[in-house]
Image (cartoon, rainbow, N blue to C red; front, side):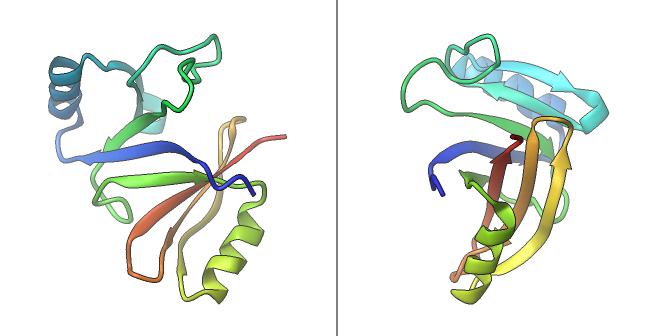
Length: 126
């Protein structure tokens, strides 16, 4: 399990307005994915696959504010989401949204930690 923070998500009541805000305020590049109801936020230069090319930098996403994502979320990379959720649940956390496929890129899930914070998990497709 890598445990690295690899992504963030920002929910928005008005995604177009929020995208304009972040683009203007910070110069972020926005790549809208209307079929997914999602937009990729590039906070730094990226390589051909869209991954940050600057060491330590992360990019994120924006989606319409609705349950379970109603506040910003930090996304953590794991080797196996199912095993990670088992561990999280055994330590007093809880599964909010189980493992789901994200196109052919990988898998995502949401959980609450021991303090009730909503967090995300990411498993890259092999």
